[in-house]
Image (tube, rainbow, N blue to C red):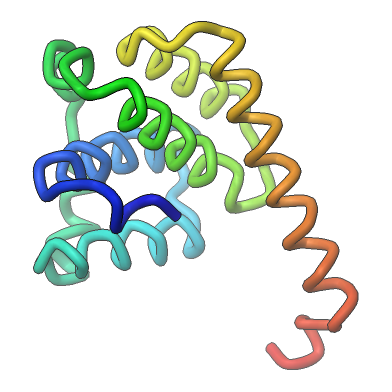
Length: 139
């Protein structure tokens, strides 16, 4: 959602964080792959490179995340939360990953909670819209 508002370095950091989050529950779903590839393509990476990076990603150095502007920290956390929820199963391991990410970004619990509620409302809205137009009939 906010990807285009980020500079190239912030986009790279976001993609690294999203690769970590995608691995959190041990399953990288197609919807997660689609998001990662879309972000990677905008950075000039090909799909194979992005998906290979998901398998080999490691936790980013803490200082890189702490040095981000506050608004970028919130964007990164919100995009990570969106990725964690996108498959419709917000696993405990994903929730724990987001809590650790919040700590690494130095985001307070209230901010994380507000962002999580916003993402959840958006997911509910999207799923309801898909149900209303019977998207599964066209799959």
